Length: 133
Figure (cartoon, one colour):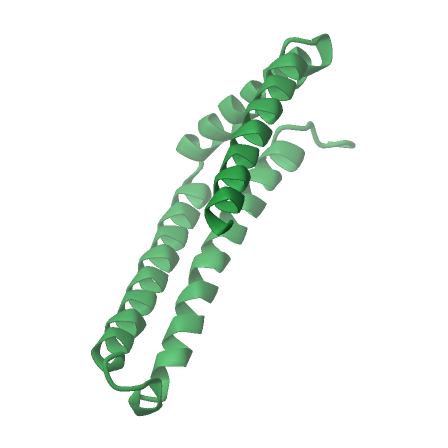
């Protein structure tokens, strides 16, 4: 019975993915979809041009990449410590493992949020002319 349920749910996931792909493909070919895709491509070009030309955005890129690296190393450190004590119990794990794990995830999320805010800044502020100049 469990095997039948498992197979049914796996086929159900496949059917949902096919239906969602068809809906996306249909909406992509409408006028609204074509306009949104063109606007998205225009925004991507604007972001790439501003990102490669401005010094402050280049420094922000280095800062965000540093956050990604520190976050990844912090998560990797905590995972190696957890794997060392996983044979025994997590009660014997050092107390700083949870801190490093949480700190790593926070650094990665901070890098993602800063990158997203910088792209919003380019689209909404740097691409629009300033009034009363």
